Amino acid sequence: MNEKHALFIQLLYKTYTDAVMKFPKDVALRISYAFFLLEKMHSLQQALQELNAAETNGPSFDEEFIIFRYKKIIEDEIAESKNENQGGLDLVTESTFQNHLRQFQANIEKATLLYMEFWSQLTEETPDLAKLNDTGSKISAAVQTVEDNWVKLLKVNSNNANAMKLYGKFLLEIINDKEGGEDLLEK
Image (cartoon, rainbow, N blue to C red; front, side, top):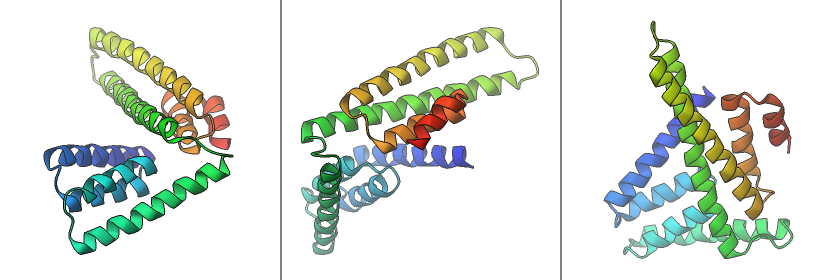
């Protein structure tokens, strides 16, 4: 069920990003997307960016209030997390970290889908060895990319709980590295 839930969340994320690109001036869509980013993706900076974009597109009075209120909540959470982390990250570092984190999530999704494709090919009555070989090499490259992204994330911010949880679950559930995954999830 967790795998289905994660795939569903990724599908929603993709749907929202496509919709925002197609309808960039839709204030209600941007507010909804910001709520999704805040509640499901736990991406404060990206949610704040969406609320700022919604604010520039002429929202109605009630939408202005929602935007103002949630921007204040997000800014307070960011300030609080900075205080907890002994000064936290500056804005440029936080932005860099969020970009690396988005890329990290996309690469984990890509590697997971490749694993699913590999296992589905194996369930065929007569698997095509050439396809298996091709998919296997793509998996190796995707896993290496995820590991490289993980190193970049650690250089920017080594104490992010969401990134540790994401990578820990990836190691545990996809790579089947129980020791490494459980270590990260315990932190």
